[in-house]
Image (cartoon, rainbow, N blue to C red; front, side, top):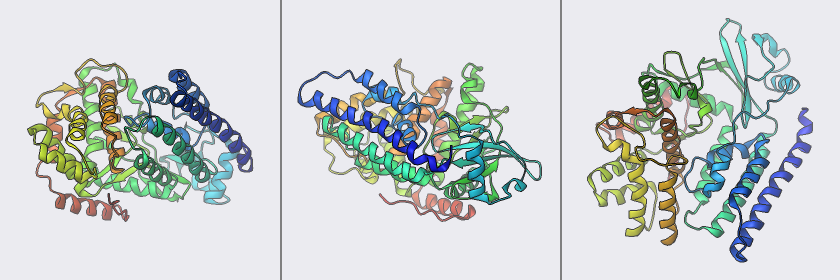
Length: 450
């Protein structure tokens, strides 16, 4: 596909998506104003069909929305969760043009070999295998053409979907959710920033021998191209039927990969999608794709720990303090009780000092969906709530990883894993570790304030 063909492709693409979103607006409006019964399951399936053949940010947004409880009705979540990251790849002609535009004529001389066929294709870009001049294996990620304008157009579509949903169901004010997704998605377009995130994670996880981070390659990083060493591994679901001790070890390593950075440095990988890590033969974890990374103010992490302690000791005042630290405001006693229902669910595996599964009650559907529905219904009765934007990707990581641990049917002592990370916690110490990690990575990424 020629780069100058993209305008026509985008116009056709947005016509398809616009029609789906417009149809959603009309049908939901008729349901609300005229009492017309809408088959949400069928309409959600139609929406997935419209999005399923598309590259670009709207597909990425759909994947994100499928893992944030209460952002959209469950019928749409179940359909959007089926969208896969393996969109059809761009062909060799596109690849050659992109390589020339990013590395200049004669780019081939930087490699022993470069496979013009993509090894993997995702929503915003695709990955190619290559061999460096020293013989080492490389992964080179190339961004699809004109993604910046596609991001802005798709974020407008998302805002419209949220507005429609907000009119019929005001339990969750999605303004901050949209703002947070928008900022993270715009950051994902900057591959130089992603390379900085890799260096940051390399510094934070330097002592974790069973977690592996790719290293960006000098001379192979631009805004739209990212070269790194190739990490060999297998998909997590290959281990779904492995012996219990194997699945438990993988779960342990994934827990460390996500939460050592969060509790020690206030940083979280905000995209626990199954395609963003692979498992090595020794059961170590390759952590991949660092476009969606969130750096938190130390006090926000302190609020996460305060809420755990509040739930474990039934300290209501400490729970209120934790919610206020996060940025919830004007909370009534009834809203606090309702938020605690969700907190009790999320923290439940951490409260018991014994090996256990992440979710021991027999439940169906997505991880956390049943509890989220109950919380949602109560919040709707109480007039709704506005989640702070920092809450979005922290909650997404917890729910997304919970789903992974559910896939693995892992049974480990989450309590001890967690307490090992928070022992002796204080915000000043986290602030120092965060600053040291940023310095070691030779980057300056300021934490965002609530």
